[in-house]
Amino acid sequence: MAERVLVVDDEAQITRVLRTALSAQGYDVRAANEPEEALRIFEDWAPDLMVTDLMMPGMTGVDLCRAIRKKSKIPILVLSVRDQERSKIEALDAGADDYVTKPFSVQELLARVRAHLRRAPERVTDAPIEIGDFVVDIAAHSVLVLGKSVHLTPKEFDLLLLFSRSAGKVLTHRVLLTTVWGAQSAQQPEYLRVFVGQLRKKLQGDSKKEYIQTEPWVGYRFLPEGGE
Image 1 (cartoon, rainbow, N blue to C red):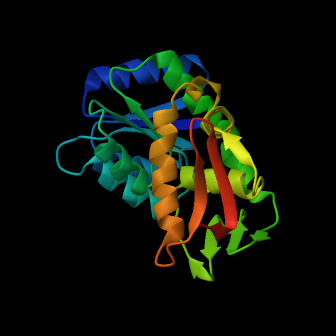
Image 2 (cartoon, rainbow, N blue to C red; image 1 turned 30 degrees about the horizontal axis):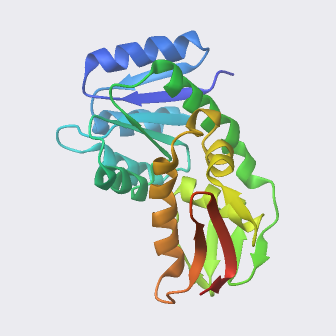
Image 3 (cartoon, helix red, strand yellow; image 1 turned 90 degrees about the horizontal axis):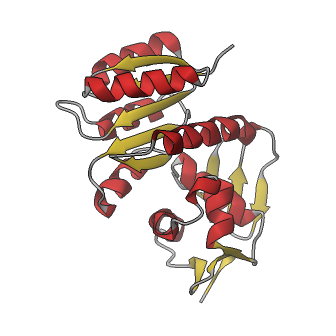
């Protein structure tokens, strides 16, 4: 059965281009021109991945991400003309897994779709990881830090999972980017910085412990018991 992709954009030209490109790759594609319509399709059709614009009249793409996240963990890719860190963080906090700025390369977007669909089933196979202050439950897609539940976006969870499997070791920018986002993202360290910054804040919480240590010009090191 072909994997299902839901495309949401108020620009008909964008939905036509994406529908054509995705269908040519063998995906089963449906399109919506507004978030409310997308939610109805989601309920009836159960897509495997969603690509949505960020800025739409009425209900925004951010609102749509929040609504989907209450029901599903499917990968969500967000499109927007705004190349600003604030808008990226807002979308990621709402549950988006990836962020692509318009105008975008169709081939790059297709590569990201393939990467997210490849990784989507992998999260349900491993036993929980208990290390330092953390319990990372892959099957439940949940994280406890010092016994307290911490809500992470899917991509933040993937980052923490990679960190927890290499605790104490330096992971380079390239390794983190290619493992979590795919080879097409290897040259985008600023993309990684946004995610790591958000993840660091969420893990610290009220404890102020430094769990993710920056190694200048190289990458990051995960310290599960916190560092100075």
